[in-house]
Length: 112
Length: 112
Image 1 (cartoon, rainbow over the protein chains, first blue to last red):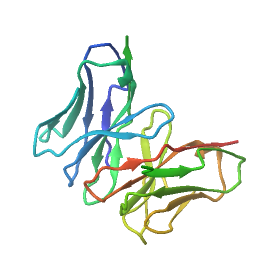
Image 2 (cartoon, each protein chain N blue to C red; image 1 turned 45 degrees about the horizontal axis):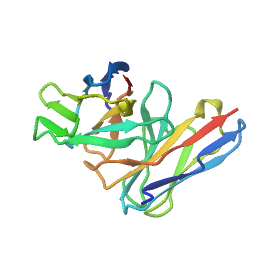
Image 3 (tube, helix red, strand yellow; image 1 turned 60 degrees about the vertical axis):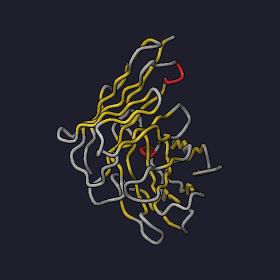
Image 4 (cartoon, rainbow over the protein chains, first blue to last red; image 1 turned 120 degrees about the vertical axis):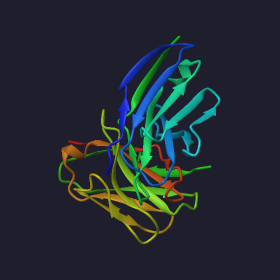
């Protein structure tokens, strides 16, 4: 099972600021990279995903950028809001498999 | 609009007791997964079932068994619970490789 390295472990941002979370993976065959958002007491929920035939995908205030040659991808949360306070997980698919390997998670706190 | 349903939501066990965690999905997904989530360690795969009738070990299978009862249901059994198995357990399902995984809200398990 590959390691997916996620950073930072936690971050605090002011309302209206930008949150940036980075992930690096080792190998994959399926080109599908999801990000999950988790609130306390709930399961992870799919937030946004990218297939790296594109280098960037934007949905509302959330943007994934992807660098296939560097095996890195990142999540940007623009105009961060207190309701964005949650734990975010990146994931990369295992080669030739149905499994996902998850990063360790980033806890984002948005201060009003 | 149930998605993935896990039961029970909370459970306290004594060391050595056995227990089965239940999971059912109503999305007609082929693949199902069991994860455990511990602080600072992200989501670690215990077992998965790529399709009905098949099960495979994940990253941390020791001390657990699974049964893919039918296409909808995938159960996780602890035969002799140990304090190290205190965790939050999540079930997920997906349409297969390259498809997003959808999670339940978890079972919070404490073993004394």
